[in-house]
Length: 162
Ligand code: FEO
Image (tube, rainbow, N blue to C red; front, side, top):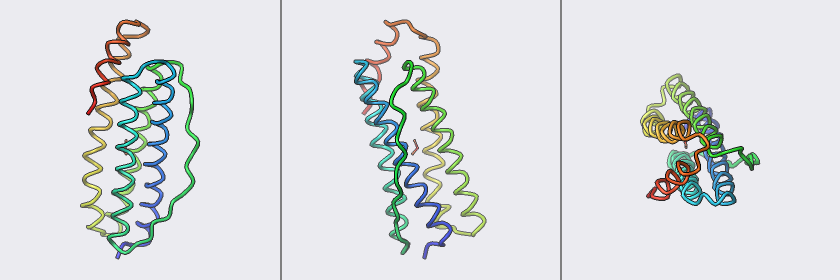
């Protein structure tokens, strides 16, 4: 049986993952509007990944006899000043998600909940990748600045995300 405190925290994490999906979908809409289709594609894929993360928590709570409770999502920001600002937001957001996962690990340790610790291990590794991906694109955009040809080249590259 899943501890009540963990059940509550995991339900909150489902909301955070779906908030992330919603945020990245909003960024996809922004990039579509800016005719940066590669960046829009990258954000749509990212949004799908976030739904996948939420579903991992959803299934874990159910497998351990808990009760999934969904919360209302936050309305995401709609506009960014530039691709640089959007990817900076992405990187900042992923750092917040990492902090949230780390808090869950601390809670699982405190409660000696080994099943949750093993489960959360996947997320600890995933967050390394999530931060690295966003940081790599951000650092390229910092060097590109507002060079239009550079933005188009990066857009073409991001269209290749599987
Ligand atoms: Fe679900 Fe981007 O972390």
